[in-house]
Image 1 (tube, rainbow, N blue to C red):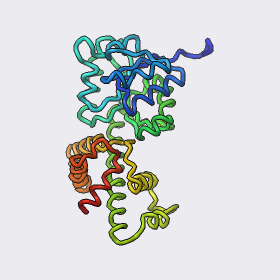
Image 2 (tube, helix red, strand yellow; image 1 turned 90 degrees about the horizontal axis):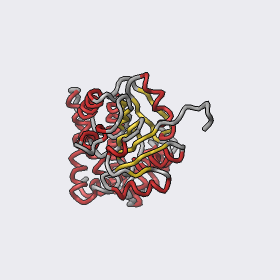
Image 3 (cartoon, helix red, strand yellow; image 1 turned 180 degrees about the vertical axis):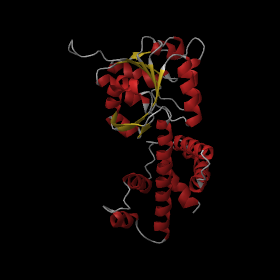
Image 4 (spheres, rainbow, N blue to C red; image 1 turned 135 degrees about the vertical axis):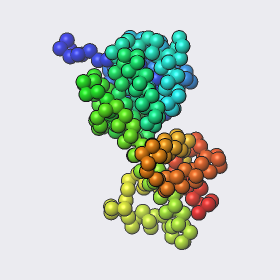
Length: 297
């Protein structure tokens, strides 16, 4: 780094699971100083080989951090990491630092966390991402960022490492809102592909005939095709675990209720996917819902 370049921010990454781990690794590779913490220490420990400082608590990770990134399972886990007595990040993070909340936690939790940030003297950026662990590893996520305009320059270099594109959406909370919309679309595509494949086979046709026919045309949604091929191969290695998808479906339905919008298709999908979880697919990829489509057409 030349003397004329501004120093890069010190970053604390709280949550180094399937998404947080590759994100932290990419930040380290880009030359950022990174401290990492996870509720399961074994998830964070390998990052020390890439130069991360391993912290035994969120408070330790946030010490001297200019930016804190939270990428945890849900809103309650994020709040606990920030506010737990003695170990919460809020006890050590300096006033004026930026809290980038990147987990998908829904509208109510996002508003609650934004209020927590304001009461703690922190700048709050709501920035969930579109993409699974593959794009996270490749730095090709889409960052759905929202927050105070003056703070954007402080986090854009971070987002440039994590994603191929950042979409700024205005006030904090709009990132979460768009993420719920995108997840609703993802759920519809996945379930539609599962049901379409079930019908294809029930009518005595081969899935390849379906794929060859729609290839290159307006019906060839790339995401649906990827999931469809995984369904045919019974490749359920989790890129987007079903239990996380079901959580996001519930968040989308809660947002719809708040906005007085009826989502009957999404509600029906939730019932089917709950059954798929009960049948043992909770930790499998969402492609595993093909089993439900075949078992209960």
